[in-house]
Length: 272
Image 1: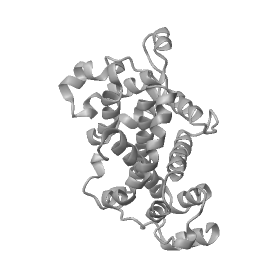
Image 2: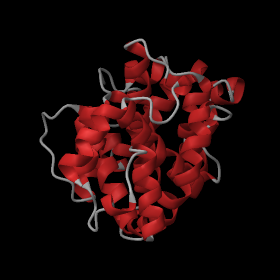
Image 3: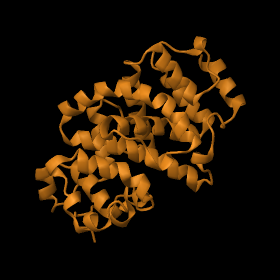
Image 4: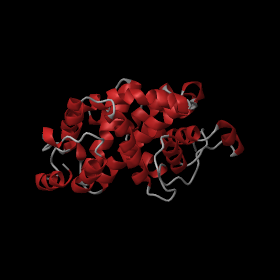
């Protein structure tokens, strides 16, 4: 039983984080403890003091802390000390970032929309070279003439369809990695040293430059969003990672561009 009261059931969060490794949970703990300020309860729990950095040993405390940040403190008290479900958190973040969603929309679809919103905000701050670097990272066959002037929402959505889950994962890894560098001054530990890490590092910095504009927005929304938005983007990446693993794929071992040249060529003939 967790010291921080856990809200159950929470099917969009509890099963996912309970099967994550300590390395996969590490940045979530960083956001909660380093960006949560005096509101963070996690550092004061017995489980944290005993097991950190073996975060998987106290996954329920991490989950409960995230749920708590999603609820107003006064309302948390009214709920008996428990926070809100992850779906409520994601819908709240989407609303504040002006992302249109439906309450019954699949959680991974809402997370994908949030990723696109962050990339769109980043796109506005990027140079043409940085934009090209980002697009080439997802679709290596893109040439200079293929670079769209506006944020390529249709292109990226089509890339996800053409490339399957691996493209979704790469997009989420770009964003989660850039947020981690901007907020925690470190990347994603569990991909360090892999070909995927070397590939993503080339253009994750470009996204990070655009993300600096969002930190002011997070401050305006309220201090809890300095914790919630990075957590949601990291959890989105973890969901894509474990979906690939559940389908028998290991994205850490897949080199960039491995999702099929033929499908990408068709894609760019259609959207360039």
